[in-house]
Length: 554
Image (cartoon, rainbow, N blue to C red):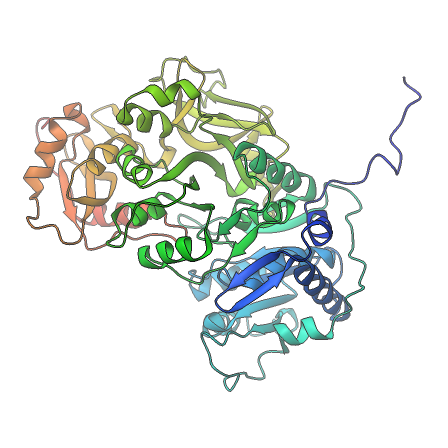
């Protein structure tokens, strides 16, 4: 046995890029991407990606260079997930909703050589480049404009700031280009920046092996069939759409691209294209459940939701319309799905409310993960499996990032004792299913008691008038901190509840120390581009309200 060694034939590096070659062969004449009046087939997408990669190499892009993209969910964004690494470069998708200062920081930190810029983000990126230090002209990346007739009828606004347009690069490229395969599966393929809501954004580096693993993992765990109709409601700039950009090529899906959407647009696209699958944060579920255009579906639509624990009330409303929701968990640092609420058939016999409660849990490790646990963050010892003892969620497996770019201290802080420490506070239930209670920074400590903002929010979401809810800590003179609830109301609600009524509603449904002492009504809660409520904004608002001065529990 000891004489048997790896060879060139049996040790080809894993990479999700090869999925496109296969898709062009198996699904060549089938639609790959649909966007407004534009439709491509898989053979066309394959050819366009090769041509674009060829042009990138002609531009002087070499293996290891970073190529950035500032664009929404449009065909070019999808193609760049293959074309950039086809050229051996590292793909860096940038959130279109970031401010110019943050984008400038990212471009300099990543040392981007070239940036593809959607026409709607042109002014934003130009402002970001203007913030580069005066003596850094040689470090400024080349700009390529992604034109779009649905946004700009002509290229009359094309300026000398841009070297070329996207379609011109595609047209110039060689369709017979041999794409550059990784030398090793540990070679970097993408650089994704964390949100940077509490500090400077951190650059998460993922390798070919990790994204291959998480891609296959997602297809198996979600039980995705061949040739689904996938609606891109999840931004591709958010962890590469949870790695589903590559996964959809593996199964020959039809990718329905959309720049922006609301409930009416979503239901229209679902009906027009026969959508079978989509992803999104709980805000997407909320949008579907509470849209004035909501309707009973003709056929079931599978939804993968994550990014924040979905309130049981929203799960209940969404599934009553015919959507089938799978709750998952992942981070930018994991590249995609690593924990999911694996559903047990006998749970279908339970009452709807109990089913929703179970589905709101994050669940168990996906098959591509080696181990998942909840531990005491100080000792590293596993917590009791009692559903109430809180600890930190830790992960171990091939999907995890290589580390943070140019930040060894941050990398070593989250990789310790052979685990990746997520910063999420969770419990382990007796059946082995994990439930996240909060981010560690979002736990409210009131009079020595730990208050889970997620649990309080779940009760608030069950109120018939409340559309959105977020709970943060407000400084309190007596208790140290007390829960402060920010809520928005459903449109068309006749009688607006008062602060006292909402507090009394909560008081009847939870331990009194958990009840919000303050309720703030807002038209809409601040969110990230992926629909996560920006609690750091709300925490600042609560802090600026000043100290509460309650002397006893409600």
